[in-house]
Image 1 (tube, rainbow, N blue to C red):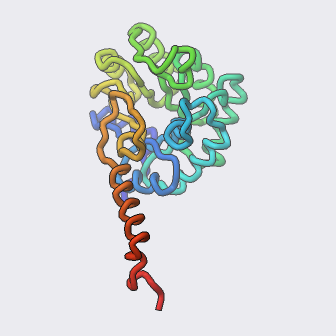
Image 2 (cartoon, one colour; image 1 turned 90 degrees about the vertical axis):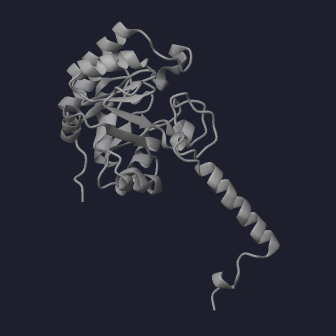
Image 3 (spheres, rainbow, N blue to C red; image 1 turned 180 degrees about the vertical axis):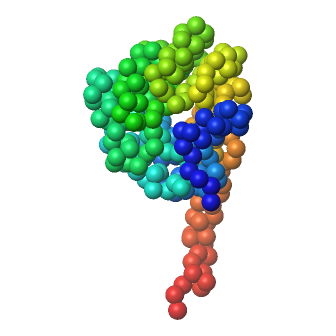
Length: 263
């Protein structure tokens, strides 16, 4: 059995040039599949607001909902590192509240780390969490919790600001940083400049690793997905075929046959 992925093993992977794999998962069955497949990191993302709850953005997701989903995922994992995503307003109002909420992911939900969005503006929070022995994955570039401030989900192209944010979150103690919606050339420069791993989502192939939303990359839903998403399977299509067959067989009296009856 492989050892569970840790912050130390992620640093080693970057040093050795071994790409890091990260996916979202929001419940026990999917986390079990992802863990068994050997994905290095499972992010219990606040993207569940869109992928699971059917919302237009992530802003309405609560701490209680995040802890609930993270606890399910943690119970399923023996290899993958589990990261709990800090939802909107769980870390912005005060450092004390931020540290307390981050600690709940480790104490109550079994996560090994937390993720939060923002660059220079959240460095004091990252530093405080790190001092409290809470590993932090940072997230810069296109940050979905700032969708209204950014005027929508837009690619971020300010190289100087992005590089400064990346260096500052590293200095604050983040063990890795998600680069979202960033031109690949800029992401490559950031990756080369940092000692900590970069995890790209819409940031090109030069990042140290990649993350996607599992509902998008497996085709679980048929919603419109961003340009950077590759559909590696089409579960929605397979499910629709199975559901139609079930309807047809029930209506025709074919199911349940004698093979599915008790004697």
